[in-house]
Image 1 (cartoon, rainbow, N blue to C red):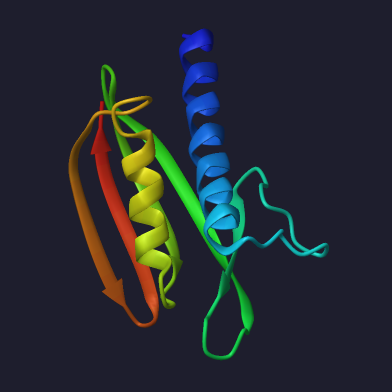
Image 2: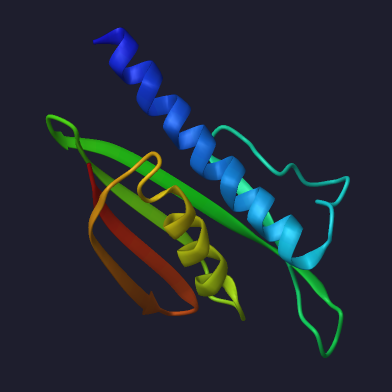
Length: 121
């Protein structure tokens, strides 16, 4: 059971690292010195808009819980901003098939926030 939990935590770290790597490779930006690309509960993602070249950080929270044997509920919560959904879906697509087999995915936008709910094996 301990090894299984450790593997799940490793997968969560891999997903967070993939999100940060995808974002930095698409924008050719490094994370700012006052923010961390990866923390235990959140990943700070910089979004560089083409018109204003304004960099804004948004908190990204990923919650993973086990539903049943080898089936997980993944909840991704962040602020709604331009291209955020594109980056998140690309990150999910890149790990799908390698680490996860996505069974269902729902996107909910409300009050300036986005929640992506994924059921994966």
